[in-house]
Each structure stands twice: as structure tokens, then as C-alpha cells.
Image (cartoon, rainbow, N blue to C red; front, side):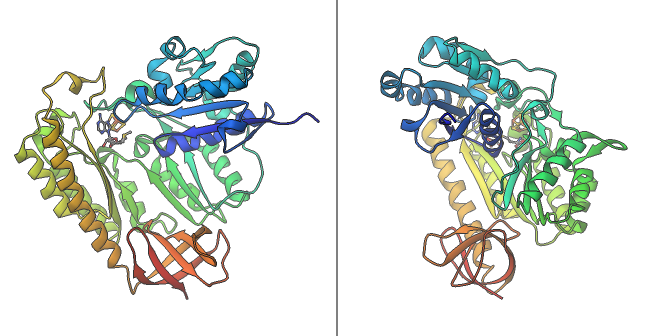
Length: 439
Ligand code: SAM
Ligand code: SF4
């Protein structure tokens, strides 16, 4: 038997990229590849890129430059770029960095085996189309090997909302939902491989409207179907848009036992003027009312969100409105970013906020979010939570898992294995995690 070829994948950005990298690795498994953690060992290096942050493409070019020496030592080494930078830059990548053999956009991963064969044959291989077929269906079935207790499962891709700052509608394309039966089959297979918690993924996951057995199915409908799978203990979903938080989904948070009390619901700003300029099509007030309804359905739900500060034309008054909104919601987690221009998006052409002012606002916002986050985490001390244990901790005899609220919890000296689901009494709250004892 010939030696397997080695694949090194580096994943940037969101959880959808993590899922895509797994699927790409599985697809290349069919071409005789096994994964390696070291680029020096690799026969193929694949960068699965993200375009959401500032100078994303430049960072990819500088990372690629670092592989020059490796390629000189090992001329058979193939180098590929996948993900949203591949989509946005296309052929330009091969022009600017000739050591790249393969460029594949996020909608074309099922064509990876052909592209790899082409690259192996010494040709340049490029595919950044938006084909009609379902790439996940065309990708090889996932292998049957055992795996860890948590998994991501992409159910929806792309976005039609065109927020004025965002590249996703351009790099990931129009909104598409996968048919429910394929998702349910994949979920069942994951459970058979040891998975106990599935996080459903989509750029706008709650806009999900896949074909179900009795016509169109909403995300809530899909969650109720997943709820029936024996052995699946927990369901999560991310990322949601406030305008797609339908009544059935809010209700499911109150009634569906496997749906975890955690919701990532980005608002971006607390100022109606800025929200309008962002093309968000919700107001601060409508967002707050929505959270009220969600909390009525599930009072202990832990909220998380995304914020952009320093969006073009944001004034101190607009920023104060964001701080006010954060005070009202009290997020258990939140991600805040300084606005950065994305060429080709409407906001890129507008008057920019002074960068130092934006930095200052970001620091003030993060200080407030961190305070709430810490208070909410500290308030868990003395409570009993249910923890799904995932892996050994850094200390000997320690296991780490996640509570229903997605807090990391570590426990020492108990007889635990990955996949165990236990009641844990929280005894201490640290910088980024909780400690507890199994009951
Ligand atoms: N679909 C989700 C929503 O509607 O909020 C967000 C998906 S987006 C990939 C993830 C986050 O990146 C956004 O919520 C936003 O806060 C941030 N982001 C996107 N474009 C940005 C930009 N140009 N500058 C700064 N942050 C940005
Ligand atoms: Fe980007 Fe989310 Fe807006 Fe879509 S809804 S354009 S993914 S921020």
C-alpha cells in the first residue's frame, strides 16, 4: 500500500469555515490524504480563509509567502486557497502568488477532488463559481469513525440582506437552505459516531427555509425534528438575524428540551440612525422588544451579540445609544469590532470615523461588555448546571466541558470521559471559565 499523502489545513474565521474544513478534509480523504498538524510534513497545504477582517487578503498573501521555502525544498507540494478570500480574489491570487496551485471558492468544495487531480498533474486549478448543485450532497459521505461529542452542521449558507459593511453576500452568495432530510441524515450519522451536541450553522441560520417532507420547513421545524433523534442531547444554532426570529423559534426556546438556553443575536449598533445607514432593517427598540419576548419564553437564556463601532458617520451620541442598549440587554458574551472598510460594499465610500476615536469607543464598549460577562459568569457560583464534557483539561485529572449556557466548566478528580453529561455544582468563577464538582 502506498503511503498516504498528508494534508495541512489552516482555518481562519467563523465556525462555518471550521465545518467546511472538516468536509474538505473528508473529501480529500477519498484522494488518499490524511491530515497533519505540520505544514513541513504536508503534500498539500490548504488555507481556508476569511474575508471579514481588515486586510484579510493581504494577510493571506503574507502567509502564502512563508511557504516559499517549503515549496522550493519539496516541488511536489501543492498549495491551495479556499474560503472567502479565494472567492473575492479569484485568479488574482495565482497572478500575485505563483506558488499557489489551487483556488476554490466556498460553493465549489465538492469539486475539490477534481481540482486536486488537476493540480497534481501540474496545471493551475481554479473554481469560484456558484453552481446550482448542493455541494454538501455531492461531497463524499462523512466517514463512520468515532469523533468528539460536539459537531457543527451547516444548514444554510449565504445572505440576501446586504448590510452596508458586509462582504458575505458577495463572497458566500445568495441565501440557500439545505433540504431537511439531508440535514437529518447527517445529524443521525454524527450521533452514531458519538456526537451528543450539534450546532446548526448559517450566516443567517434562522432564515432557514428548507424543503421538509410536508413542504417548507422553518428552523424551528428542523429543531423539533432533530429533537426526536435518540442520543442527540443538545441543539444550538448560530448566527441569527433579529428580523428572522420567528414566533415558532422563540416558542421553541421555551418548550424544546434539547434546545440550549443560549442565543447569538447580533445587533451591531444601538443607534437607529446608524442601524438605518447599515441597512439593518431593525431598530434598537424592535431589537429590545424581541429580547423581551425571548426572555419571556426562556427567562434564563444567555444572550450574545456582535457590535461594530466607528461605522462611518457614527457620532459620540450614536455610540452612547449602543452603550445604553448593552446596559439594557446585559450580554453573557459579545463580540465587538472596529469598523473596517470592505471594498465594494456601500459603506466603504462614506466618510470614515477618526481611527483613534473608534479605538477609544471600542475599548469603552469592551470594558462594559466584559463587566457584564464577568457578573453573569460569577452569578453561576452556587448553581447547578448540566455539563457536556468534551476533553481533558490542562491539569492532570481535569476534564473540561460546556454548560447549557456555553460557559466552559472544568472539574478535577472525577471519573469522567468525553461525552459524559453530568450535573455540576459551580464552586468558582475564573477569568474565562467556571470550576465545579460533579453531583
Ligand atoms: N449574519 C450575522 C448578522 O447579521 O449579524 C453576522 C455575520 S458576520 C460574518 C460576523 C460579524 O462580523 C458581524 O456581525 C459584524 O459584527 C462583523 N463585521 C462584518 N463586516 C464587518 C466590517 N466591515 N467591519 C467590522 N466588523 C464587521
Ligand atoms: Fe453580513 Fe449578517 Fe448583514 Fe448578511 S445579515 S450582510 S451576513 S452582517
